[in-house]
Length: 327
Image (cartoon, rainbow, N blue to C red; front, side, top):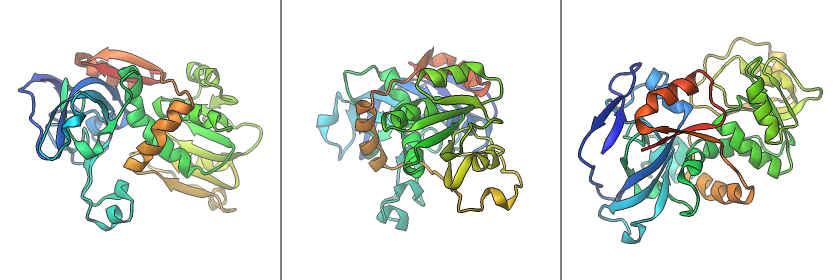
């Protein structure tokens, strides 16, 4: 197998070759067709997330074909296209797992962070955390749904039923969930970096009612807002933009520190909540909805060996939509 591996935090990924891995009990081996590049990969590589398993192969938006199964796995899964997300395994025994909150598991494993991921030609996955995908759809277009889509969906559910929805940071997750929200009958207000007219035009092309800088506000208050950009300064800005009783959802796994802010921004029963990881139930809900909503992901393909370039383009804000590595 070929892979791009992280050996030390803060350093570029290095190309390697090694024998194809063998699946253990309850596992499958995928021949990878596509793996999208997520901002969480940057957080792992740049050291924002602590204690990755090093060396580690990043990547957790994996689409591939099952080419080998371990003991305990139904052999009918051979040859199927599956998707592997960020949440790679849970213990099933802690109080969170038993209460249906496996996203908060005490002993989880995360793809591309604590177990090897998809910046490779092959990958091993827990069969219970690999979702069957449509074999007739382009795999590169499916890859961003495995994290940007699933986290976006969980964030959208946390935003409740608000009709006027603000999205702060219009990248991979926002461009997917905006399409779902508009299909649901909501209005989308897209907040981008100041002066990023390309991202604002992209948001409008997908049906956004309004698009502007994160230092601006539409004429009327929002019902809810989701913050996808990892910028703590956006929290008071979003609280300022929502109405009384409105909700602000932080959809990222990492964010810079939230600055001191006046209590009046939170007063009048505004709520600030976070989203952590995902559950398999989220996937069961989201994939059929994405199909019914006609979600179309906007992707830019890169060869596997250009993973560092894709990461740099994401880091510098040069992407509209999602980067996808093609082995």
